[in-house]
Length: 153
Image (cartoon, rainbow, N blue to C red):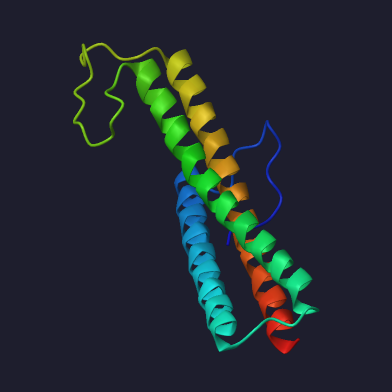
């Protein structure tokens, strides 16, 4: 995980956006794995026998924390895809990333002002993706703790 304070608006970023996206993707994948293991633990416990009445509220909390983690992971992915799609649409690229795109008039460079604006938008999306995936990982760990509590009841 990449943690630490963000630089001010005037300071250069200490972490490249690519590293933020990579770390965000790894965190979202780890959170997905943890939530899957929690789901397997819940199913194994439910198949073992009936749930105690005291365990029902904890089970509801477990479902809530796991759902929150999964929703953060999905939102992180959608944030990146939406930002890339918007940039590709504004620059005239095909919306599907698998389609090769030779820039129209590739001998004429895009204005620097336009490139800077699009780059700032992508950096903002990278930070947002990393924040969302960090939240997904944190909620996945909370769901593990709630699972352990539920199994002990």
